[in-house]
Length: 283
Image (cartoon, rainbow, N blue to C red; front, side, top):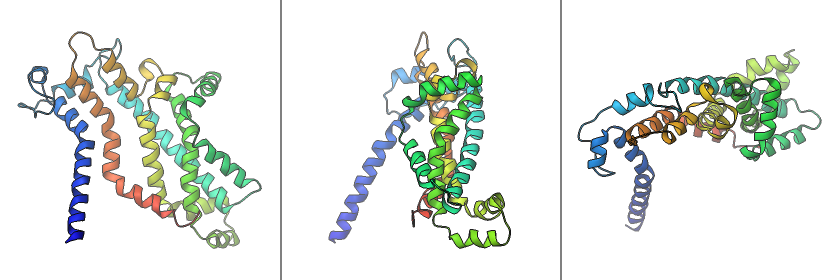
């Protein structure tokens, strides 16, 4: 009886926390489905009397981002063009780094890993100036290509850490046997190590995609105008509205911006947890 009561109390607390956590999302969704007239006449938590997607259509196609009123769709594709290559490149390089640090140990490998690990704790603000100088010298400032480079460099520390911890649990004898059979560094990586790296690849992709898509600081610092990512466009939509404040459009734009990462977690969240625990036996 006591255990049942405690379990019921625990579930009650979890439900209350879930409601508290999901309440802002509820307000955003309901507000985005209302007309401006209904927003003024109703309350914050009232359900829409008439569901309308006009605010979503306006945010996607017509909302003013600065002086341009072509919606958020152009900036959505900017984010896609930035996130996809940055995620793929940083994941592949992180896998190579983790493989080299665990299966082909070299002199100073621990020092290199310690430096990469230290890079995980470097704040965004610290790298703004050196990154800006580097992008300017490379001639890719204020471009999607420059943002890809920034996110690859900053994310490499995290992807290397993920893969290094995962590869520690793979028996060294597997690599030694392949080496005896004449397989080289890259052959072993592509044909043996990478095919069994599915769980940690999913972790790296989800982590990197979420960090890159949701980033605002790098996007605001290293891009401008038509090359800006979706988060920067969202900020401009919210802060450059003139005349009547269109709360439904702001909420719809915010939901459109966050929808890709939400879908990634809904569809692949369980694999993220599996991948994290898969490399936790050693290292």
